[in-house]
Image (tube, rainbow, N blue to C red):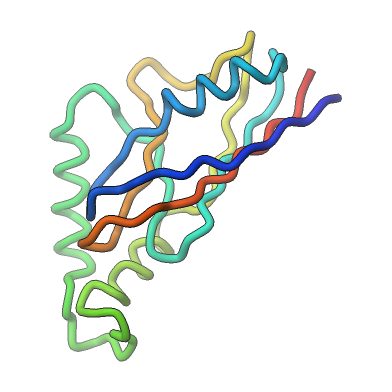
Length: 139
């Protein structure tokens, strides 16, 4: 068994999705590991990771509209608002999604479905630099 790891710095423009599948695939190609399991972990509490459709952007717009309805900015329910009206809603959105994803690697490629991509889902209204840790174990 071999291991490889790296840290990706992802610039987000603000609330929404940033596909990181191409960056992951480029790094994966350089590891020399053809079969294994890749763990992807985002090191933040107001952004998350999501595997979703990468073909039709309407899917991501619909997801954002759903979350906007489910966890609206400025909801009086929330006490924690140290960084603004989107602060606690961003934490709730991150808690409802995921901070870690495991993806099989087969023949040197991510074993994603035809229309799947890996995305950073930024929950804050303004952009941030987000750190995504990759850890691959395999042969």
